[in-house]
Structures are given as C-alpha cells and as structure tokens.
Image (cartoon, rainbow, N blue to C red; front, side, top):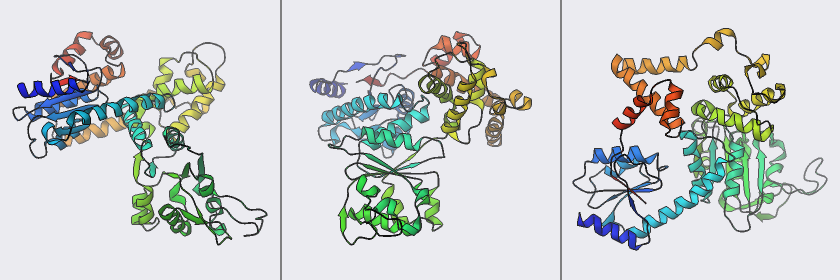
Length: 443
C-alpha cells in the first residue's frame, strides 16, 4: 500500500528505526500497529491484545483513514497506549517520537523502581507504571490500599523520582497522632507560649516541607476541625503558626495515603468533599498481597538476601506454603514472618518448612487443603450459573493455567512444561493456536 509506504518513509526520515514484525515473531520493544478502513477491527484488537503485554503496553495504533466511532476506545481497552489518525494529527511523526522518548525515560525509572518495589506480576507492573506517571506530574497524589501494602515506601520512591530543581526534603506526618486540642501544631507549628509546654517556637510540617514533599499518612484520620484549615493551605499556599497572626507561605508536593474508602467517607459526611477533590489529583490503588501472590517468592528472596543477608536457597515446598498463606497485613506481615523464619534458621543449608516457627505453622487440615480452594469454588459457581458447560470450563481453566505457566517462566516453554508436568508439545500447540497476528511493526 503506497500510503503506508509513505508513512513508514516519513517515520524513517524522522530517524525512527523501524523493523517489521513477521508471523510468530515476538516484539522486542515499543510498537506501531497500522490499520485502515479495510482492516478488521476485531483482528486489530486481537493483535493489540496479544502484543501489548510483550511490549510493556507500549503500542500505538495508527489509522491511515478515519476511524469508526468507538474504535479508539476499543483499541485502548485492548491494550494500546494511544490511538490516532495519521492525517488528523499535527506532525504525527513528532508525536510518535515524543512517546518513544517518554517510554525510554519511563523504562529507566521503572527498572530503578523494580529494585526497591519488588514484584513481576501484571497488577504490580501496572502499579509501577502508574507510579512513574504520577512522579512526573505536580498533581497531589492519593495512595489508597490496605494496611501493609507499602504506601509509605511508594511515597519515598515518588519523591525520589520527582525531578524538581532544588527539591527539598520529604516530610512525613502520621495523621493518627495529631491532637485536635492543639489546633494542629504538628502541621502549622506554634509560637513560644502559644499553649502549655510551648516553651519555644517550632516549625510545623508545612514549613519543613516547603520546596519538598509532604506525606500525610492515614489522611482519613485527620480531625474534622483541621480538614478546613488544610484545605486553605492547599488552595492558597499560606498558613499561620498556632499563636501567631502572621501569614506564612509554603509550597510543597502533597502525597496522602489512607486505608479508608474516602469516597464513602465523603458520602457519610466524615470527610470534606472539597478536600477530597483537592488531595486526589491523581489516585493510585495499591494492590493487596492476595492480588499478587506470584510476587511472594520474589519478596521472600528479597527479604532474606537484602534485609537479613542470608543468600541460602529456599525449599520449593516452603515457597508454596508462603505463597498460599493468607496475609491480612499484606507485605508488612509477610516481611515479619520471613524475619521470624530467618532468625530461626541456622547453618548454611536451604530454608525449609522446619524453619517456620511453630506458632506460624498451619494445622494439619489447613496444610492438606488445596490453596485457594474457596476462591476457586466461588469462581466456578459464577461460571456455572452463567451457563458455562463442563467442556468449555475445562478448556478455559487449562488454557489459563498454560498462560500463567508460560508467563511465569518469561516465555520459556521448556521450564513452563516442567512446572506443569506436561510435554513441551502441549504448550507449543497452545502458543501456535494463539499466534501473534502480523500487524505489529517494531519501533
């Protein structure tokens, strides 16, 4: 097609190194999928879906002709990072180059994050990408998630990635410790003699965070009397110390965190709606550990090697127990359990089930139970009541397990087959049936 050739020539002229992706080849970097009015939208969606994860969601869908209404949303839903019509965009070549440059920078930051925020699951990888995006903005950030999911650690990494010139410190305030009777001295500071025991002038968090970042942990616990005063500071950038009539200026990056559902708190009248919108310029829901169980072995290794400095191998059965166990306290609880295991372990041999303290061991019935049986039963019930037949259900589960195994072994079919206890041929046939469509052009 001459029109496509002209587009490719224009991109090459813009110093973009293009490489065609042939049938069954895997992309090795960001990609561009071209389509026109003759392309089957369903086929393009499938192509985007099958390649987006391999390209780390770095796929641009470029239409050479006008897109049907709603097509862009479908392609974005399939996994494309952006969708546009070539001729309808001013300087489309520059637009593509700008995205590639952003992705290069984001990939570097992502690699840096992965050394601290451990995990390789899809949900965690998506969370890390969102953290990188948030750090590049100046918007107030609201971190949501259960206790122990790593909100303070994520805050420290956002502050570290913040590229402001002359960036100052990160100041942490635990809102559960603020005493309303002192009118928020912890936040505003106070003058000497402002109240009993105020024996000297003291700067509060607003002053200390000036030029840097302020982290308000457990924001949902902030007393109602201080919510209005915090709103004024965020809107106007001014505050008064307790006992003072002088207005002072401050400017900081606000990061808040809570394990509460603030939207529900607003509905119930426990949290100001205007403050909620002010602090949630960018919201991020940190996943619980049960949503990223495949990350547990990596976290265990990290804690043993980098926290306790014990590089010994871990018995697979111990990994299995730790990955199947419930953690109401999430990563924090896992870290505490690993700490107890590390302190009990002696010698240079592998960590085994015997290193689990007796108080942390399951009962015999729990040990014999199938991990996740209750959750699996609930999922099967939903499918059954939805009318899914036995054969379709068996095929669905089988295909899902194959995908999980191949992904877990980073595409290594031989290792995935060994993990599943099946032949490589079975997985090769599965991959062939789900072969990548040749729409992608490597960028």
